[in-house]
Length: 114
Length: 114
Image (cartoon, rainbow over the protein chains, first blue to last red):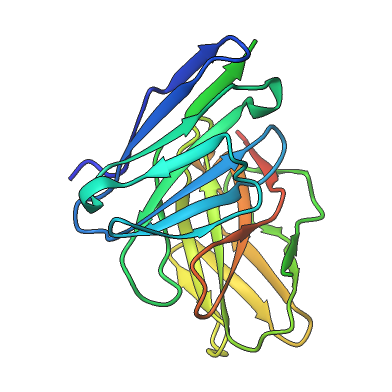
């Protein structure tokens, strides 16, 4: 197992375009998380899945954002009509069920909206 | 709402010396988990150490140890025998028992000087 993989590593897009990111978690991890990290800040929670069910969404996740995890394996995060304020590092993490489990993070996708 | 505060934006330490990174948090809960994550320049977050709030004994992982003061809501990280590879951003994070998302501080950038 190579850990949590994210694709692409970098994405530059024009304002108003749609973008989609992919995350492949550790195969035996049933929980998957998306976080956003802007420069100089710690990661902020966006959403979380247990298997294929999206169980929690942050208020940060506006209606332009949608996340899916079909079949409980990989996940995608789509941003529609991108805005310059969406420029950030998007981090994916996975974990096993159970209280207080630490996450395994991917390397992130850096999005730049121009 | 939980908040995590890291009051040291940047720190430096000589190689082989010891350094302590500070973290305080605010919560009304009695049961929770605390974490330190390391984010090297490659950007992948790595779990360094984890502490369960109901355990009084401070967690230790090789050169890394914590000083957990529950009453003071303080959770500092001590790195002994600092190595060049310890150069990274360090994030303190909080998770409520029964919750699934991590709250991160703003990070401390640590530079180990040869």
